[in-house]
Every structure is written in structure tokens, then in C-alpha cells.
Image (cartoon, rainbow, N blue to C red; front, side):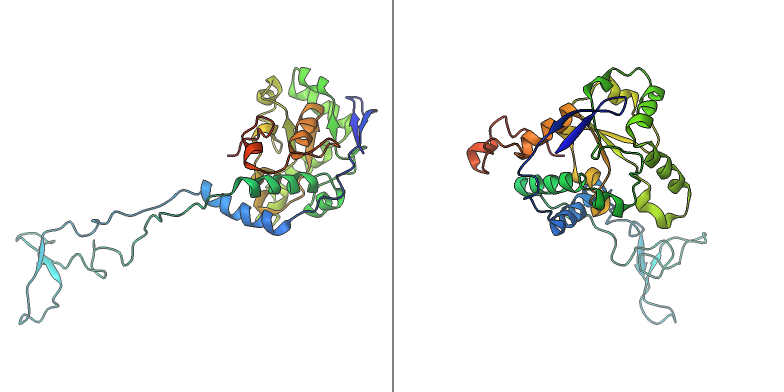
Length: 275
């Protein structure tokens, strides 16, 4: 069962899920899609085909004790008579230049992307997976941390951080600031916790500039956020509305879950947007 905490750090409600322990985490599928989604962000590079060959040059032939390379035309200039266009010449072309591949980004199936988000969501709720990634859970009373919906009415970032002292989770934010300044070997500790909201409210734009804390809408989740660099088990802070929204989509409630068929995908109940 999952506990909903108040802003003072007390227990208010509980959510019981029976089908939660039966689901398995597919680790190979997370690593596969995280590598494919990396190429989507990468900037492609290319070189012009005509670069290094746009000079008026012609070889002088044999019989002059010189190489048979094409040489620049003209007289009265230091450039005239020099070799060009070849690989070893000054201002020439490059051997095997970079080319923009046509099939750089592979398409991801809708069903496989749906199962990866489910396995990443479940791994963030188990404490041993989160501790193995390097997060700190000493302050949190009830894990996973599900906050009340009254938190949307906060008026400043200073008030939000004071609530985390009562509920817990502020020690991990301070830890990620220290790791950010240290050696690059500890890159896996750079990213701090992730806060998931139901919609882009005023709180989304208020806490957008906080250091070592990321915010995202529950309808626009991605694998690179829940499992950065293919490492699952990121610490996540939920609200009550966002946590219930994700359970309804993944079909973890005791009600009848929709099967994966062509007709079910077109319905509005399966309304998750993929980047």
C-alpha cells in the first residue's frame, strides 16, 4: 500500500494495489530504448562535397621532375604552381568526409515504449533500486513520497523547500549539489530528484529554476527522465493527482484493464503522449 503525506509530514490516506507485485521489470528493454532515444538529441554533422575542389587546377604532366598532381593556374603569385585538390595538399579535400546518415534515428514501437515507462515507474517505487543509484532516503518517512494536492497553492520556492523538511527529501537535493562540483567520475549523481505534476500549473513555472531538481508533467513523461543513461531507479516525488493518473493509464487498479488491441489504442483512455 502507498501512503499520502500531508504538508506537515503526517499520514492522511492509503492506496491499495493488488497487482503491483506481479509485474516484472525488463532491464534489457530499458537499456535498448535509452540508447535509441540518445540519437534523437544528437546534432547531425555533415561536410560539403565540393569543399577543397573549387580551384582551377590542372596537372603539368610528366617530364618536369614534379609530381603529377593538379597545380593552380596563374603567374606572379605564391599560390600559382602549388598542388591542390588532393588529400596531402594544402587546402585540399578530406579523405572520406563525414556524411549525414539517412537512417540515424530508429523508430520506437508504441507498445514497447509503453512497457518501458511501466517498468521505470515501478523501479522508482522500490527503495533498494533507488539506493543503489546513489540517492539519499534517510529523511523520508513514507516512501514513495506522495504529497497532497494543497501543494499547488504555494507562493514561493522558499515555502516549498520548508515543506520538504517536514515530509523529507531535502537531503538528496543538497547531496546532488555537492556531487555536481566534484570530479566527473560521479556523473550518475548529478541529477537530483524529479517532481511529477498532473498539469503545468503555476507551480511548474515557479520551481522551474531550482537547482538540482527537475519538474515534468505526467502526460509528457520520457524514458530519459525516469531512467537517465539507462539507469533505472530515480527518486521521484509525486502528487496525489499525478500518481492516480499514472495508475489509471498503466492499468494497476483492481478494475478491468484494457488489452492491447487496435481498437483500444484509439480510445481516449489510452492518452499518453510520447516525445
